[in-house]
Length: 155
Image (cartoon, rainbow, N blue to C red; front, side, top):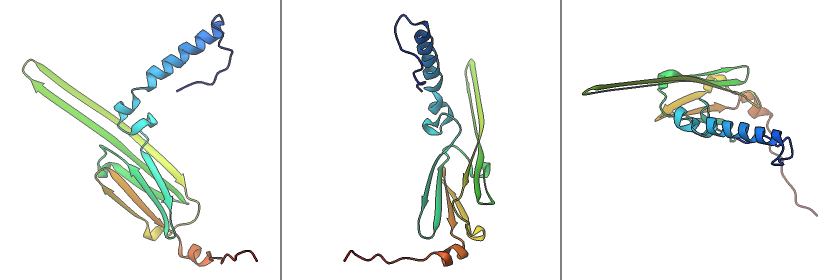
């Protein structure tokens, strides 16, 4: 993570030295985040999300490695889609003369304002091998309002 350059980086400038130190602290602090969280380079418990649209509606795919299906909640209210959950990890090793126990917990929440009204009664969410797929079909009213316009060539 690079901070914006605020001063001329003249090597005799005390502010330049301070800025370099601050940048180094941020780089050291953030470089190991992906391995700690398991959610990629975002650096926090924020899952990677893909959103696409087709003629039927909106498709949302969230990568949730290490998260159990029972620890994920999907809600839709007033065209706001929210995905939230919790990642729990526990490891315990007992060997002769040593005992290791590690636990890590973290929660995440991502919300998306949808660009149009969807058919809430037909929204589907499927979870398979750490991947959550949500299908949000267009509302019937929106489908009726959509009109394809023919394009004519230049004369």
